[in-house]
Length: 228
Image 1 (cartoon, one colour):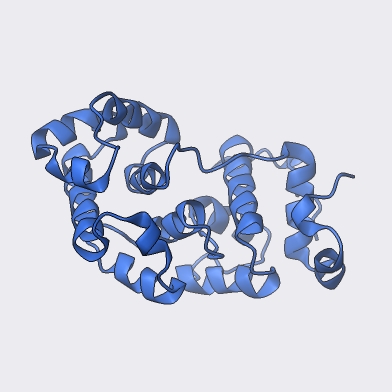
Image 2: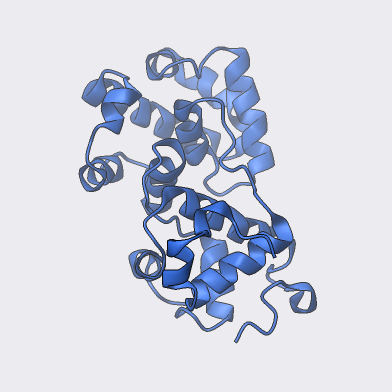
């Protein structure tokens, strides 16, 4: 079996008995690297984290293409200067476009007001403090916030989504009613604090959730079949 490079050597030896690592290795063996989160810039990734709320990534890609055609993703200032109605029209494929237009403008406004639109300045902020700031932005909840931190800013913060909850509760590893931060903490105490590992792991969970662990699961084809 090919071991993911982030799990070679001493790290793998220290945590080789963890069921969370076993799950990761099974998924990686079947699916390989996912190259997630797609995006040409860190700002684009952050915008994508907002647009993907309550919709599929294929719809987000359409909205991103529209924004790029209008050069609205070149900077937070450019996005903030985009007329609200125009912005809503551009992101219409992502759904809830009026709400998301307001959320994008609120986020861009925060980025400009707090950091002058400079993501390099933002990235120098301590993770916990930055997380608190992002969660104060209207429309940025824990999953969106942590997606920004992990994928755009390379912070070792594990992202929990509906697929995570579904897959791991079905395997009796979490309570289906557990809170976001309780689930997140479970991953982060059982895995090394490596943003590359968290990135790949979450992407693999999403892949499994989309393809096999649906509301009506295909358990016989699942890489996690007979896990326990």
